[in-house]
Length: 130
Image (tube, rainbow, N blue to C red; front, side, top):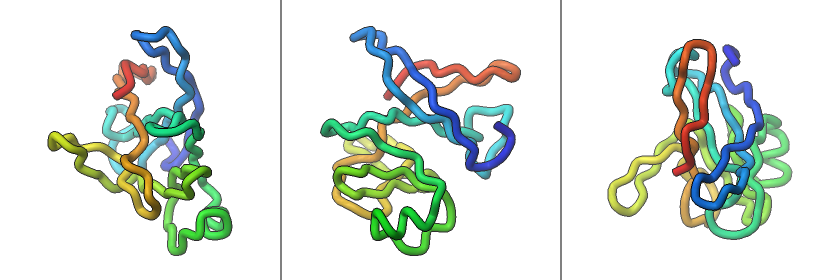
């Protein structure tokens, strides 16, 4: 995944419930592909509700389906609430926790749940969810 904005779907196992959670790994445009800072992974399950978040690379679709104008790069969308999250922006959650995927448009309560990554050589390991 050396190309910026490339993505790969995968599953991460929830240690508490044993459930496999669908997630998406995104190669960010900044940062080295040999470091975790060069990637962002998020759970596709919406933090509140039963929607599956989607990684949207078609900028025209962001405009037509989400009403989001001016996107210059791929975003994450919640098809139920039409909320759009920006992978390049950070947000602060209660308790002063900094998370990636700030809300660019919409009414969701928080950004997608993050998946912690660990880089080992050419392997990218999903360690745990937020």
